[in-house]
Image 1 (cartoon, rainbow, N blue to C red):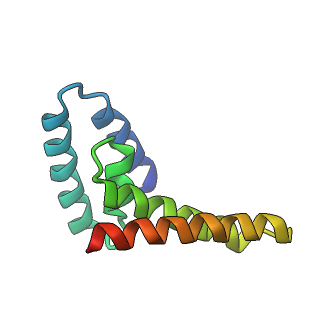
Image 2: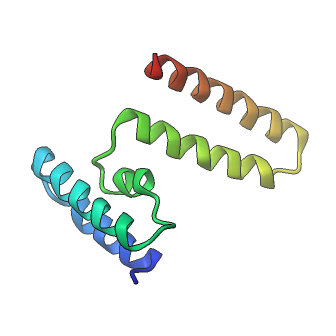
Length: 98
């Protein structure tokens, strides 16, 4: 089974492909194969790392990162700022989903 490190190396290699269409095709192919072999594989995060993500995928990954940081935040001002950023991203996602 592939590990996070394997996914990272593959994403780094994929991101170097200059032709955008080929990069997206390769990233999709890799993501499909990785997802079928590892239930914890995060397709959106992989596509972002490959520089082949849709705007929706980019926003979902950013939102996940903000949620994680806000859970770890201790200072109230930091928490408020993360909450503000999360609300902005959720609004943008809602617009895309319409």
